[in-house]
Image (cartoon, rainbow, N blue to C red; front, side, top):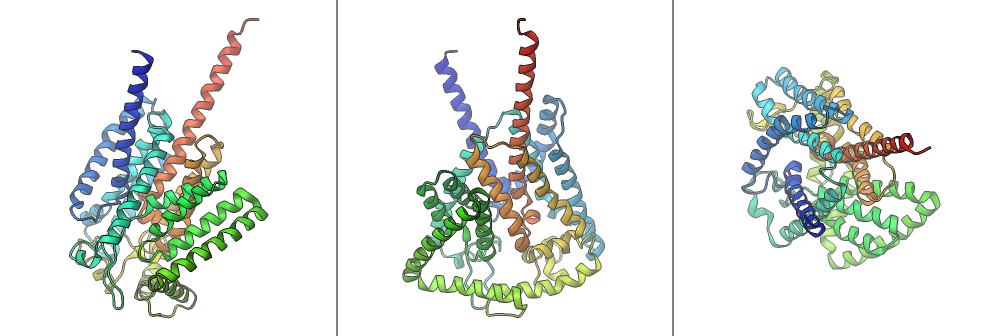
Length: 441
């Protein structure tokens, strides 16, 4: 084969890898699970994911010499332990049949897909460039799709579909689309950290375009978590004085943009500012406000506290929406554990489950410390920022548990790249040793 033919073949394989990854990631993130007509596609993906974990993953391990990393051991323990806690505790506390508990945890197989993903990265069959290209494509793709939906479609026309697609209409509020913005958020971190590295305004501009779309219909906790993450990253990269200057300049620019936006869209911005005010009032005073969403968190917390006190260590399990009316019927009132963040994790999984799911951040920290600053720094910077963001955001939403397939993807990405780098270092050392042994005297 000529060099030109080999190059074309490599290019074709690269395109195929990236297309497949771009198709697989939204299914693994459950980005479109509640879209009209997508439920059956997502269920089929659960089955296919299970088959890949059971059949293809053992092949990869045998091919690689049966080496097992700490991350792989952790995922295996998490899949078994998380499913057991959710299933058996709901059976013991509420009497939910085990079959319903197991079915409610079927998305756990998506975590298993990251076993394959990390192994493909470590072996070099999948490259960081492939992952970076797919994530950026998905960031802009979902940005365009979601923005178009918000501009052209009326959420109230879709209330007959699952509540996962549109929000429940409450007194004084209109339904809105419930869209998963994790890919857009990655794009925000990607361009923001790239701008910090390069000091080029076009990257800040790209992040500023993506950020409003990532907030969704509410986004109060999300906005605070994103800002906290970016501030932390700025201080780590620029130091105290440099960070203070950057943050001050950014605040002036943001104030100018907000002033212009307020003049053009006064009502939506006033509503959003009022939402932030109500959220802070609920957090600091615990008193109800005019915001139904914030008030519901108070009532859900009060409903959960007695159960948390009784079953603090092992939790109360996860109640399936398909069993006798779901968690609301079991608790006697409107209740979703995912609404109350950290307390929701403790309610469902207890202290043991919280530590089990929280260990992913320890693994991410360890893998990040093994990585050198290399040519892939935009991907690594954005990945580290997303993992930090997820830790902040989990306080109010618990996404490290309820969307563990998302947070663990980024942990798997860091772990896979770290393993790949360690293998390359080892191979360089072996080559150097062989050269020294065979070097002529």
